[in-house]
Image (cartoon, rainbow, N blue to C red; front, top):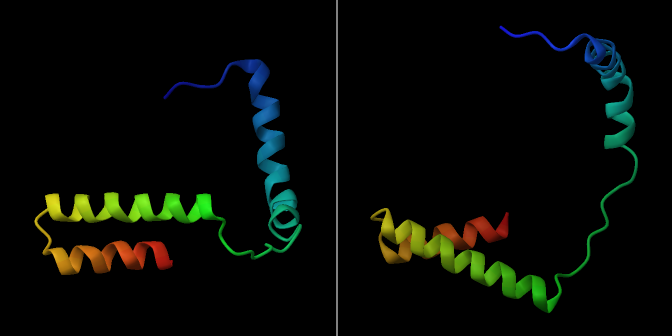
Length: 76
């Protein structure tokens, strides 16, 4: 196992001690704002779904099931 160079050890230890204090503040900082997807985002999601269908078909999944998998992936 390699050890960290001496100058980085105090920084790493400080970050490790501060992480439990800072992480809840970052998570609770602001609630997510839901908004409808833009046309560009919907185009992207359509392309992602098409790629997922192709990947599933290449893996031997039946077409109807591959489309269902792609739809579920986008819905989540």
